[in-house]
Length: 406
Image 1 (cartoon, rainbow, N blue to C red):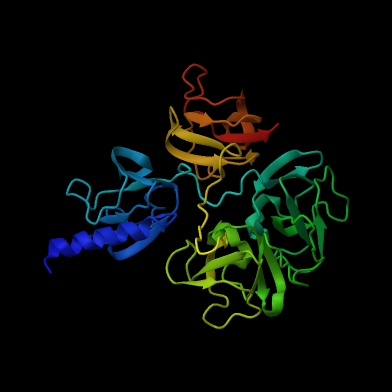
Image 2: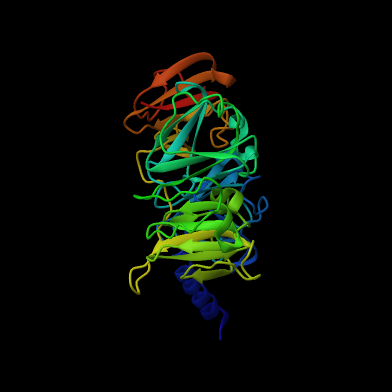
């Protein structure tokens, strides 16, 4: 077989594989070889893009995605956008990229959204003080950051339930469950929450007061358990795509799984980005064998539609996040922000300091920009999307930000 036909066939095969993925795969050698890494939609500086600086030589781009390469770090210098896979970059871009932006069907925000459902936590009663919003998942003490042992009130947006663990940072021990927002928590819970679990509610839920304690075999949810026989820490998930960071404490810590009668799952072993070696799970497993137990790093859960499965695409939809951009007219490095207070721009999705130049603001949201970190200096309140800040004088000026949902 002549090499050109081989590479052409390889290109077509890789295109078909990539079209079913929710991420871009990059390689440090041509022909999709050498070291490979996966990049979900997002913005990646030189230190974040995984492949070494000036080492990118080929990549696989799923249908509907695009990848923009930048000559210099921090999205500076010459750039070029690609809408399809490249089995070997041309001489003008081979081994040249120093930063990357990946955009998918839902823009260049991280995948794994859950519609408009999240819980906003506050350090003070009556929705005041430092605040952050969290999506469904399991959060240890280290993942709560400034919220650890500092929660006094919270508001639930969507059909969610909250389980909090008192004086414990590993989602174990004494716990309490809340189905409704709390304006001011009693002394039994105030400033005592060290870890927590956020999950979806069923129409007629059966929810244990301690982890495990039963099989939530609902048609609409899958439940992951850290121990065999549906025991230990548990996390209930709706159909969707879940990377490792969204599994929280359950990442590489799953021993049994309960599926609703209309659900199936695809689990990925030793990989947090829904790629690589995987198994299809079509029924409950009360105790996984050694090939799967404590090796699942990411998972896709889907509804069964006869013989026509359709793994759901990730993405947060629209109307539930504020998106900030480093350039005017909604261009350049971006970050998606849920309601919360961000003491510096690093907390706001690792967005660069003094670089905000435009933002998209959904109806019902309000943003306050601050001149200095920790909400110091002058402030500027925004109630609608802005393509630029040249008139107001706030271009490249914000060092901290607060996002509110009215």
